[in-house]
Length: 583
Ligand code: G6P
Ligand code: ZN
Image (cartoon, rainbow, N blue to C red; front, side):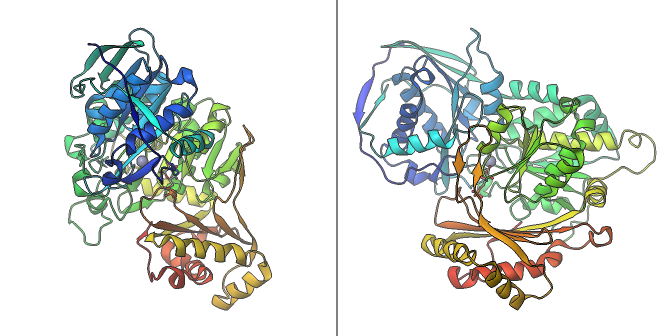
């Protein structure tokens, strides 16, 4: 089938600056004439020509509302820009980690490899006609575009005048697996629709010992529940957990991907993953049923994870530390050692303690998975994680929700090697976490989110906190005036990161107040919201004394919470007496 290329004239549209993870806006914003087109062309223009002309591109995402339209538009623009091939997941579905894996691992029938991807997702934000859509570009290494590229994209959106599009290219049937070929002015153009679960499962099997996990899952003593919150993880969950690992069908909750995530908020935390939380015995009222031993959830695009034990929540900061502490023994991929570990700045220092004790290279990077990519490409980091429910490794360049679940299953299988058969009680998720605290100390941790705050007020609050930092004695006077039972603030700054690989510097990455006893208060503005500003407050306290590691975390942290709220004048600036979400 032949197609022509038309040049459409356009003009810049305000506000197309990619955030922490691409451009995220309400669907109605994306539906404005030329909105998506401008951003896509600005991206093509930010890439070197060989990443466009003759290249192979992946285009897919979490299947949220507007993805089907967006995929067709991007296909037509790719064709017109001289792209050789577009790879699309069946029904546009491909999890963010699967996209990363496909870029890195997949070869086409003729040996072709992808050099980049448009990922269509707004991650954990709700979907549907009145909710969010999003798009981001990932590079040849499978990771999100670095700031040098996203800055260029943004600059291009401010000057764009025209874009080429193959308007007469018929829509491709993305529900049917197969290749559709076209002929354009620059030659052949193919669209291949495939099921990315094949590539993803193959990769997972090369990392984990599926046999030992299968054995764990087949034990009547071990029960499991996985909640995909109607996100794209559902497209992989049946295949991996049921078909490959033998879990019961009933272990899968909300595993049918939906355009609007069933009306829910596809963010795996204690607030939004309500059904799973109830099943795990962590809800407000007891369901009466015995909760499963192990539960996990994913976000819309399946890169995030939440790990739960029976009536027990594992903080993401502890999760990455525990995975790192057990990886070498429990996960074949790491059996020859870890190259290093890394966490984002606001993530608790639980990982630091493991790194120190195991003598591992350790890095603290700004919020955003893209900062881990350089370290991994340079062979300096094997396992990393963030407080925002992201955990992963250098098997790809995105965080990976299902990988995290398999990592925990591997640890459980390893710890239960001796106990799996017979009558002995299983080592539980809670046992593993408590044992970890007993060995390394516990980092009490909580995060307060103030969503959709007036952007001006949020900025004023941050400015106020920066101004305070000029005098630590003054800060301590305020702190002691609020509570006398906390340690002194020893230093305070705005986090700045110099990438050890390429030397690039990222400034203003969050405001820190560091206490003499290792406690920390961190304030940041979210980079992923689509409306107003979201203030995040991260509160952490380190406890080495084994007799004090069993407290309720909100109770243990309450003096620091008090200080954080008063020091920042949170209520005064935001008008909010309570956060929107506490995790
Ligand atoms: C996305 C990124 C994460 C990052 C998170 C932070 O999920 O992939 O790497 O931690 O956003 O979001 P925030 O809203 O705090 O900027
Ligand atoms: Zn996500």
